[in-house]
Image (tube, rainbow over all chains, first blue to last red; front, side, top):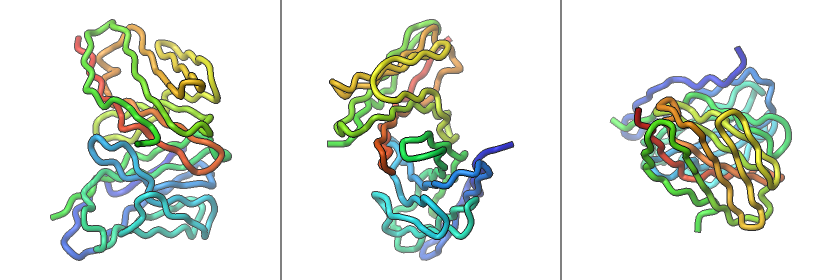
Length: 113
Length: 110
């Protein structure tokens, strides 16, 4: 089955803790994205990567970090610097060139303890 | 002003009704237009994809794009309770600038 797998489905963060959200795709897509979704605000871009070993900040990158060591994997770390991390986090990968369709994973819901 | 404006609803209709969902956008460079459907606590799934202006039909769903007025629409005919979800419009240009609307929450009542 081809697709995007996000884990875990639910994650809890303690004060001052860094947590890492996993995103794996087997679609052979070059570009991958991380979005944050809050109620009534739609999707906001955190980071994106067009190729391995390269990534760019999106609109709300502060308090987050990413890596892209393999084409299939694009993990997101929510650092302790992110003061309001409670949200639904979505990973996506893009088919083809810019403007191509983005496919999404099932999401990770992060809450603060 | 947001780059993509979408009425968040909520919108409630009886089963069998025709549903009209709409978005406006501000960037004239956008030329790819998408509608995603998102069920509660799930990731968005692509419903319709359109390039430039025009109509596209797929079963009960029709997407319309009017680039002159920067207006995109999704029509759902013979709506079903299983259509109850949040619908997100999205647009992009020739770089990594996909922008999403806030999503409209639709409930179709049996």
